[in-house]
Image (cartoon, rainbow over all chains, first blue to last red; front, side, top):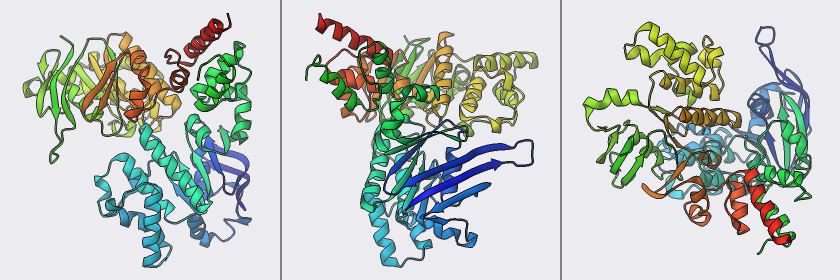
Length: 284
Length: 273
């Protein structure tokens, strides 16, 4: 069971002078129950890829398989795919529109044709996962702060209980606490539903901290793909991809160069601390 | 006396009981570079808008180059002296051509055409966007749009620019473009105040003001501020990763990877001798 892309390419502006290959022959599988982080520069194809996963955009060539079935096999039934693969756009808080937070979260489940009780249950569940207090459900979403609005928008996608949750830059522009709240909400969702998560981010630090797998896109192609450990085991290649390495990784890269550390595949502060303490030089 | 002088500055939003900014007194020297940090709702953006005269205080006062921002007669000269760059790059562009957008402010100020030409060219050069002068604005990247917004302010020849989370919506490359631009402008003598969530950006400033519940919680150099890891954590703020590592190991603070490597190397040498 997985979400799989086979030989997928997307070309924008075909037949015009603005022709651009956004994705170039992508072959990749998002395994069930795992969080895959996607990183890459602006223009590397991250958002285009996200929009393919729930059938919002159609590949120019190639196929996308959801649990073994081509999602475009029956184009008229594409909306069913969207209930299975939930997509939260960049800055989703701009898409809130209902009178109350509760109604906004209920919009997706309502469109799925669920009954009132089930909708209420889903809304409560999604609100809880995202840390939205119960008494906020009757408030207008427009009274909330940016970080709170973001949580409501993401809860709206979670309320459909999609098996696959795709989030395009869910933590962009938030303060450190807002960021942690949102990302922890996503981890909660994965743990509670055993769902599969695709997390798009500019931040290598966040991706390293929250994902099981990492996909690095560069100019529409897969630059690297594998477990977090595997990706960070080849620091030189990562550094060459001109992505922003986590600061802690850059430190250990430098220490290794100076012969002060054997390893440079370090991407969390905790692990770095452990390595240094093992030297027996630094006090507890 | 600073270039911007805030004295017991208070601001309460209409309909609110609790002030967003409460009796803040701060002084910003001419040519200084300050980062204001704090979690959401700490009052940092409100403070920024008060410091450049976009908001007028509900209590206390702000003097910009000696001019009271509450006095309407000063408004036009304050706007010329102090500009502001906002968060969303798409909300700050008024024209479809880059150089026309940059010329918007001097045109409105009734500057002579030849002078406008020079001001626009200089401003575009200062932000490294000269080759885009005749491009259309809507096709630019976020970082480029923000640089155009900055050029639009520069064309007025301001003495101070306040950035309100100007890098929040940008990717790492765009963020670097804007931080580099801030540094360059500061080296030209422009007073820079930047509100940011990114600690690596704050570390580039000469001074950091930490806001909490509308008040100044800390004020000092990045090195002084980031040495107080426990207090920052209590204020729900993160510190740069290497700063956190050194703090947990009980070593002196460092802000950048290279600098941290120096600290660790030093410590290893010391212990092995």
